[in-house]
Structure formats: structure tokens, C-alpha cells
Image (cartoon, rainbow, N blue to C red):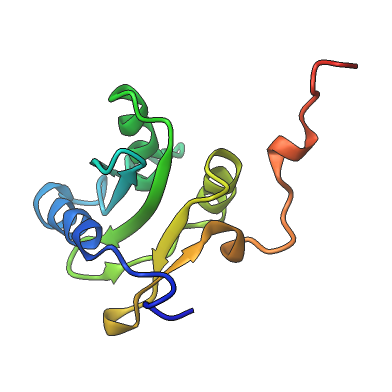
Length: 138
């Protein structure tokens, strides 16, 4: 997929990079995510590391969007601290993103090779939670 068919939202990448540079301190917050809502707003989040587990930056951004009344996301990107650049979502986040936002585009790649891909391409032949929910007739 090229940038012409799936343009990269560079403003979104920079928003995540800014949060990674300014809000990711120490080992507890090492990743930042930015999501663009369907209304065009940008929401951000950082991961919350804890040895018992903790949410990734993408999941925190989903929660931040919801607290602002946005439940439809268009595009998301994660950026690592210490100038690590764009980092693809982990498997758990890929599944959550697919389940909640099946039409979401996720920015992946490195440097000039960034591209926005449908979340379905990041998790091919996957289990889709919504496909297996009771429809209330049974």
C-alpha cells in the first residue's frame, strides 16, 4: 500500500512523538499513542507499565477518547520514547483495535516508509469478537 492510496497522517505521528518526548518518563511510561477521532480531533495516551501488567498506550488513548465523548476512531499510531519512532501495536492491542474499530487505519513502518494500513491487515484470519456475539434472538 502506498501513501497515495492510504495517506499517512503526519500530524498524528508528530502528536504521538511529542507526547513520547515530553511525557514518557522512566520505565513506567515508554510509549505514546495518538488517535484521530472521526470528528477530526486528536487524543493521546501513554502506556502504564506495572509488573502485574498494565495498559498499552493505544488502550489508554481509546479510554481518553471515550472520556471526551469520542467512540469512533479513524487512525492510530504509537511512538516509542528515546526517539525510537513508530512502533507497531502488540498482539493484544491489534485484537482490541480490530474488535472495537474494525475500520481503523494504523500507521506502521519506519522513517520514510510509514504507511497507514487497515487494522484487519495487521491481524489476518483473526477471531473477530463482534462476529460471535449473541444477537439477542437466541
